[in-house]
Image (cartoon, rainbow over all chains, first blue to last red; front, side):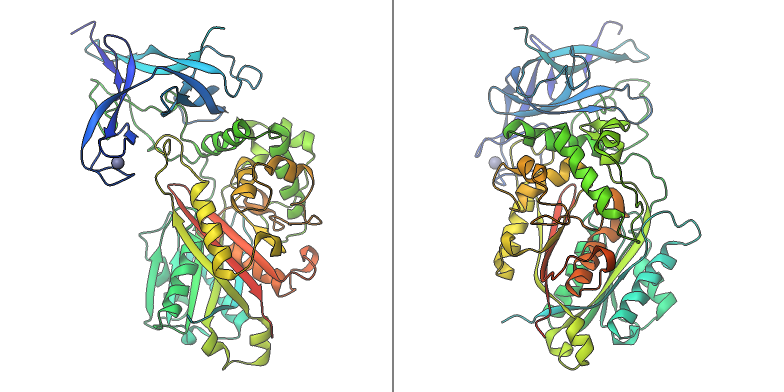
Length: 134
Length: 401
Ligand SMILES: [Zn+2]
């Protein structure tokens, strides 16, 4: 099965273009990335998949220097608000991980990259956000 | 008219490393101290609420009464993240309000040692041999450090930076100043884990944990306990004049959880539930933020304290940066905040924290806080927040007698 790819999380869709997909409540439109029992906003029981915009802006960040063993530091943890108003957390990449390299409000776009390969040769693909070139 | 509830006695251990004392030693020291302080005995208690987070399944309340008096009363062992202690206080208070008890004790205790970094994601997830989606997010491996952070310094760092995104005048300097204040305050508190003053330059140059929080802007882990004996107004009237004079009124007691907000699934919203709790508490007590003589709030990180100035309505909306810059929350300022040293310097043995905040406020309202006394304090507010999330707010008032 060499050459297969699998997304890091179920809400990342790789084809045809990488994007995130949420479970959207059919009554109140609240969006969730996890498996749902019901809607945490209104209690609704019906959901439909909703594709999430792949661009947005940096709403908040932290530059993490201490983490569990196996986690590479420093990295920039980013809270992004997409242009369709959905909040997403991921690393911010293609920036220098210091306060001068990261600017609140900066426009960002979704990117994907490999983060490991399993014993059957399947590649795990993660997402991150990167600055939009000016 | 609901029954009034008062703090009759209160005590805490020193916070820090207690290698020779176990959980029950710490709980006993605080509980016996609170009983002695209130001039009552374990036989006077109708209910015990015992809060301990990391030993939540150990029957700590039973172990405690096993040592200090096995009277057969109802025991409620409670756990509610960093709001565990405040929840124990509320359980004791609700037992009295319900009419089932006239005197109840709340104890909070924790023995953490050097636990290292706390995170809200499970530890020790190993790399899989074959990738297989699992869990609610269908993840095939640990996402920590790939999809951002769930470590506490980072989560609260992000909360502070979001405030900086939305409001002017907030940055690294303001967060550093908060840590400066709390470390400075702790030099007057003999029960604090640390009692050392640091310069702004030292705070900013300390090892970075998760920007904007350096090591000196983060609370330490530690051991400690605190206790409070609560009594109904009716029973208090049967006690001595000195017990009545030292009693402190609980004018408001509120516990909220986080309502749904967009984005809460990726970054916990610690603001809305705090605002809801504060507003309800001011309403219950019939006081406003301008009436407060001191505040103990949940500064697990400097970035957390800053946003709670706004959430607790201590500053103008959006004005938390100006508030710390003006010196208002220093002990000689207009609204002294965390004169105990706060979690950053007094320490944060999780289960004990929400009771210790109430100990601190009550001690000032009794004019018994020694070198760190806020002169003439009459009204104070204690706030805690446990991620996940629960927020406890109590407003205390000095006895009119
Ligand atoms: Zn809904």
